[in-house]
Length: 153
Image (cartoon, rainbow, N blue to C red; front, side, top):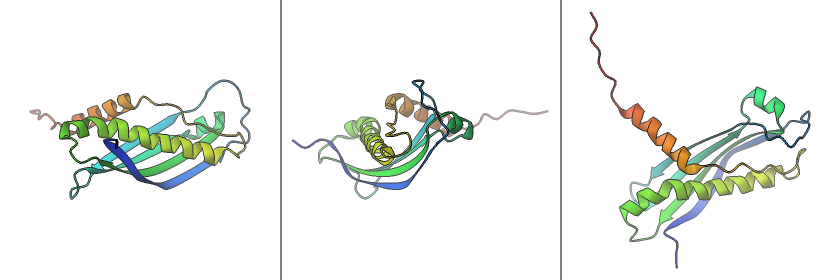
């Protein structure tokens, strides 16, 4: 049985990492991760979607100085839904399921790319994607609301 949502292809748009050779490993987890995404639908093929994902680990210098790696990754995934998938199902699945698949690609890629580096394999942390999606939707809805007009004297 075919899945309702399929990851058809993906591309690494940008990737870089720097190992902090001065970092002394410890059991304390350190660093910051910043993730953002954009989802777009193909106007000509409404069952097809593109998801752009950006992942930055320790982008600020002060975080990098305390940690083992700085990582920057941008990737794009192409997804399609099976014929007959309802619009309701599509809108409920594309963000959490598509992002989950694409972030899994990112985790594997980063792990493989850093495996032979100075501090060994770096595994991107697990994320609460539902919370991330919710926060992005809240920010977007606030941006769409028109500003209230105030009277000045």
